[in-house]
Length: 293
Image (cartoon, rainbow, N blue to C red):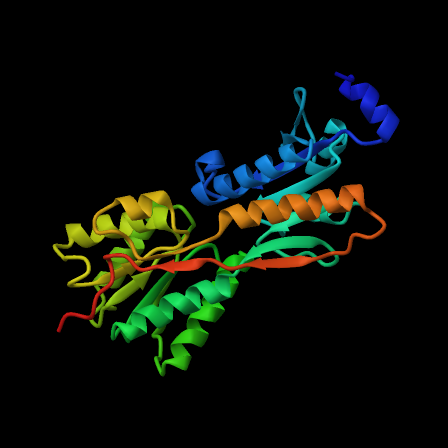
């Protein structure tokens, strides 16, 4: 086998791709959605002869910026999947000459792969309304996230399309993958004088906190209240009642990210910034029923 360092000198490429993944809950690879996207990305990249390196702040015992770490490791390009795309170090990386593909965020003149969050939330609201729900609450993730902003806009738009006016108290801010925070948010909604008949959660994992709270309040799912998750995780389909959720197509997202990034590296003269929107599917479960009167 040829020495990788020798090959890099000859081709001016290391066949090594960087992965930048940071989320506020510090989930790491226990984050089922991003872990699945990155696994698909990894398999696609390896199939094209590339290795993977995770980007962080460490060079030996010293601290580096993300861009410095990328240059130190000599990666040919980077995939970025994180919540804080407004982080100055992430912005620095986006403004560099290094090939970059982002997940669920668009930088000017950069390629991105995005789950269709607008369609996903719209499908959920349509499903709830078809069951007769008019009092729908939404516990959303971090407000600064582009994903959250798209989901919120889609939620209001879908509700308006069904002639539903959403009270401000039905919209509660939380954090993605925060079971405790979503449990508290659920309790707040359940104790409203005019409580909602359905609650949409930021993700399936957080919905576990909501389910626990509903049961602690002595209520039944879905007779007393309907719950909907987001992501379509394996967990959501294994619990009882099976959670109604929107499954994001993580396989297609990871594959598209690898294709776009490798295209920039191998064909820099013809590659153009491209945004790919990946649709998912609604998974009707057992956690939604007609409002009990």
